[in-house]
Image (cartoon, rainbow, N blue to C red):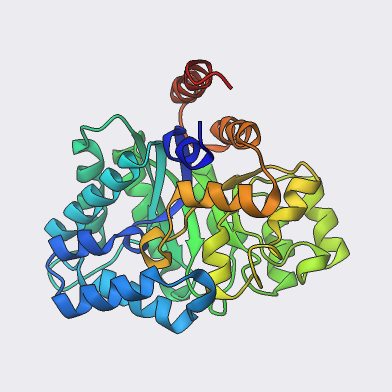
Length: 336
């Protein structure tokens, strides 16, 4: 089997995908964006990661947000994103989004619309929802968590965890807030070390979330310090690694100089993710290909990484058994 075919056909697991940032240009067109918006979106998305700027990426996010301003468009956006992941042979998807309030839509309406699309899904893909707390909105973090907990009680099999995301230069991590979420049965995944902020990173690592996103500035060779790295090694928290996103945003200098190499070298837990596949013009098969190209990961390495990722998911034990069997059966069928 050719390597590109291997990446496309492998049953994949996606643990770090933002709903609005995962919308393709075609999906945005179906959601009613103008031809001018679609053309600009497609042109920027098609640029190589090293050719983009952060400002250009934020332009794309604005286009996606402008297309999801009512319950029906949020429902359809969720449906389209799930279908795109399914068509790429993603067997398990954890979709994350920040509940938004618009003129004719409450935050609860927004969450209900996303969940309705997940529950209506007729594809052979397991989909879970992680709800994000925007760190830029300190005053409403507590209020937003209360809503998430309330919705979790209503949909315990769909809403599995809480994310902490947004502009890393704004807001602060509050361990008490996320301990409350944990006490209510929610898993915790936190954007961590996206920028140099040793004090916050240390606080997050001591909290010991179930997973961390990005982890760009953890290792001393990549802007971290020895004590932070030692603390991370003690926790051994799985990393959601987003290669193209980090390069496009400029937090990693290049694919070759990406901090993932330290996780591979030290046999630390990680999984490859897309972050915002529409905005960054990528998909999970491409991310596997980049790991193969720049870090000499073989097909067997990537299959083993995917198999290990099953244990990092927020799925039920029964769902984990199903995913493990899917991967094992695929391996036997394809003789590798």
